[in-house]
Image: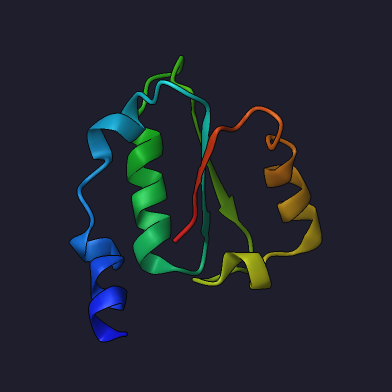
Length: 92
């Protein structure tokens, strides 16, 4: 089990920075605002992407690392509003 967990950890996966800055499909990157690591990444992605990018970054208020469990319903509804237009969803 430890080997499988390591193989899928964020540190072991290839970097997607280049692709995320200018994705070829609509992508929503959602992170909890209280998660220092991933909210920092969200801010970096937002700053690096161009205005015509297909990347939308959303910081979910009062959520930390477990955004799907901790985000308030209104924030989730706002993020899910993109569901019909998003081909990929990155949530760490």
